[in-house]
Amino acid sequence: MHKHVVFNNRVLPYLLLAPQILVTLVFFFWPAGQAIYQSAYIPDPFGLSSQFVGFGNFEFLLRDRYYLASFKTTVVFSTLVTVVSMGAALWLAVMADRVIKGSSAYKTLLVWPYAVAPAVAGVLWLFMFNPNVGLVAWYLKAMGYNWNHVLNGDEAMGLVVVASAWRQISYNFLFFLAGLQAIPRSVIEAAAIDGASFARRFWTIVFPLLSPTTFFLLVVNVVYAFFETFGVIHTITGGGPQQATTILVYKVFSDGFVGQDLGSSAAQSVILLFVVGLLTVVQFRYIERKVHY
Amino acid sequence: MSGMVEKRGLGIWLTHLGLIIGIAIICFPIYMAFVASTVTQPEIARPPMPLIPGPHLIDNYTAALTRGVNSPVLLMLFNSSVMALGITIGKIVISIISAYAIVYFRFPFRMAFFWMIFLTLMLPVEVRIVPTYEVVAGFGMLNSYTGLILPLVASATATFLFRQFFLTVPDELIEAARVDGAGPVRFFLDILLPMSRTNIAALFVILFIYGWNQYLWPLLITTKPEMNTIVMGIKQMFPSGDDIANWPVIMATTLLAMLPPVAVVIFMQGLFVKGLVESEK
Image (cartoon, rainbow over all chains, first blue to last red; front, side, top):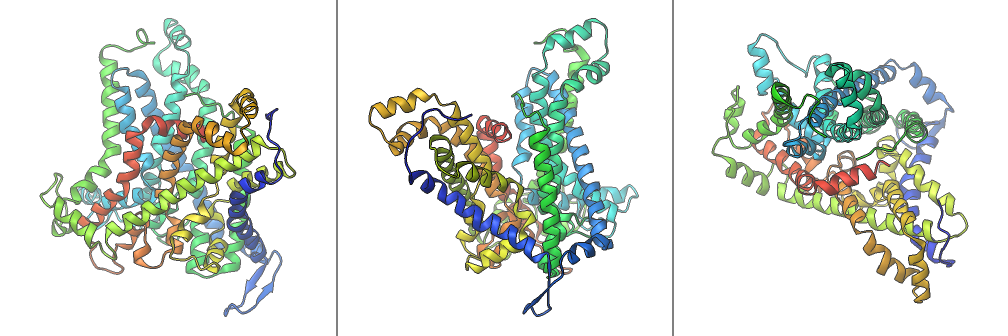
């Protein structure tokens, strides 16, 4: 993948690359290096000096009940967001694939939530489920269920999952629909002639043929749930109640900025660096990324 | 295409019905936000709130745009526009020239630079929150447009996209340009840039949405209300303590915050989908 014909110029290519490389060095590599450096120190309470502790911050974190709980919360949260948004999107995509009239109108109506910022999605859902004024909360109460995500950790988790998944449905829908439309009709019609029911055709033919798309979306959704849902959590729950919705990224933020525990926050950043690295490697090594549209 | 696989009769009506119900559920939060932005605060404070829009649309939006809660929403919209356009244009310009250097020149450390850009994919701002804040604070860029924009303008995704595209451009073009005596700058401006316009437009749509929807970064570095962007400013409109939130104004602001990116997606759907699919390759 190289050009055979190129320009010869000693200075120009460096000048062209300079802006990107400068921004990368100053705002990406330098802070990442700082995170690694700070993760080996504990600053004193006055910020005047800091003490070298080696892997001390990591050892502390891996024994910290709250950090381990946050790991578990992140796993539960990402699994739920991925399953809910991919499940709903696949269901809608299968239906949209079946209709011919109006399918582009359906597509338009389903695509726009992707443009809604996670923080805005958070405010929208918070409004409906607000224990004092929320419409859905009020009707739940009228039916005898006392909704209060401010006090109930499970309800808080449910709400941040729904708000996060809601926004991601459109993305998954687009890719699932593209995947479905790429499946040759003849394959499905052959099965229909053999008398296979719709459900049987779906699980034995369509779903396996969709697996590259599904696997690709799986990684994208996990990355989304890990790193892009900060706005949802910050607007709806602020990580509470009792840290029930404090995912890893939220904890880096709250320990670093609210708690001012810089050594621990830096060590958490380093752990997250490994998580992102791992996910990126999975994304590039193991995924057939030929999504047809 | 159509025909024999259960596309007639009752089945197809049930499919339409299912889709309509799905869309209704997905659109419901927006509808409720819209209703809330057209009624008065007491109507919301005494639940259940009305299900049909009231007559106070203009009052609420005027109140939001001109006064807001901490700062006028008009100002927050302006800040968001500056940030989103700055990030979008910055990313496109920086990436297209980097990709040009990597594809059309041979020079020492070419691949090292390429991998450096690639590695930024593994360093989202969410994982280096505190040190990045410290760097920006050290430059005195807190509460400034430069601070909002500059740290976010590097883009591995956009660089890869342009690189992929440049690799598909036939070599004959550059040979012809050379015969005509065009240097690298002329070739880029007169030939490559015009050829890239669809890619630039598709990226513009995706990156504008990305820039507009930034939350964590503006939350960290803007402490003055007059520097708030609209997406992060909504949360700041909620009162601390037991005061009742000014829901009509907050929901009007929420709808204003989603209007520009949603309009971009709806009116430029083709480019949006192209950008989305291409940027994942």
